[in-house]
Length: 544
Ligand code: G6P
Image (cartoon, rainbow, N blue to C red; front, side, top):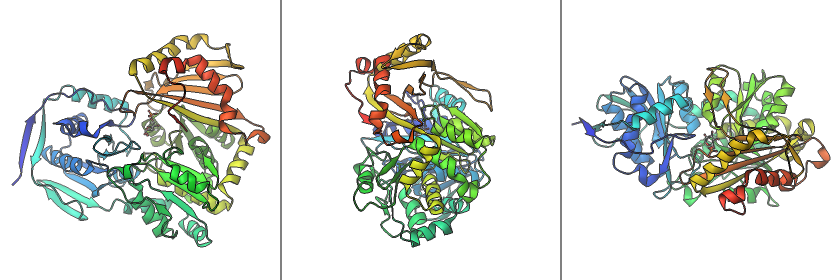
């Protein structure tokens, strides 16, 4: 027997989606009515789910399984026609985006706090993607938030849990629940984009790779595609079984959190190629033998070489990068003679450009790269494109980087993060920069003369919308740049991000240590923004 319950509730404070959905401590999400309120608000904000089909899955973190059951029961009570769920409640973010598009669903709910740690004392998250497969635009997240502030009831079916391990169709009340293999459709898409035969030959020839899934959702995907379809030896994928707390780790693929991979790639017997992905599979990290490739450089290299893969053989329509991402990709766009766009942080800002066919490849400094094949960044896609390029060029990563820099110049780049800064102090730092930006041009700091300074506002060329206050940009006469903004994905206090960049055209200086190349920019940033004074910190918590 099933029964629809209408449960009275009250608005819960703070259910405001950030850069990438609603992220909170897991215990908050597990609190009374918390998940239910937010789910009902999402359903209401999209005009209800009656008769609709939605995709549902998550990265397998703690509470994923419980949340899937609750959302299914609420979808059923709200009249959804069909829910397509990844087996075991699992779906990587790019695979969910793909399924929304393949199955022409009305959207999808993805449960993840991305690269944030998981577990009962860590983070949980929930985001909604629209019918194009992309993250909800700000107009919709504003509606969702508004709804959370006025909600007075939600609907939920009183029924037993569904067994999510069995692939196939079943019912929950009137609603059809279709449980699908989370990997199959995604693997098929990858096979259409890349030259799998060529990559298979690379492995047959003894090419060695290490893919670190960081105990997160890409494990099953990487095993099926890299070891299964592409024939890499077993053991190529490490930490490949998703665990609810990501093995106690921090599933963020950067040199700090993926240290195990870095160590392996800088060891004497390092494999030819290393890669990692994050909690929900949308981020990537690329490492060659003894060389780390920054996400900004990776975007530029992928854009410059994409034509080597079948899906991009005809060339790119354009390239987009988020504002704080280094301008290495701009130089590639210029050479290719294609459009180049600078968007605010957040993958959602690429959606319109991709939908309008204005760009083919997009990327962010935060380890996200992707293309028009889905509407999310896609970790494994980036790794496979790299493999396709390596299989065509038959050169070590180090050589590919050196020749890229020789051709385009090198944008030295680093990001300094100051975490859990008291919100008022972080806001005051940014507000002060807004106030003084107009006076900065012409002033000198550590030998660098400011050329321009502003608070970035994005004018979407497709729908004309304007997004203001996206971060402070300070450009110097020699082409160096500092960007400062507050993270939109943290769950505790504020995280100040300082992005530092310096352009160098002289190949004899391309081997300088990054910190050394950036030293004047780092010093100028501190002097202009009074970072130490405002944060009370002597140095950043994380440098990537
Ligand atoms: C998520 C978003 C990205 C964004 C990143 C960093 O991964 O999907 O688009 O670049 O967070 O955001 P933050 O606001 O923390 O710098």
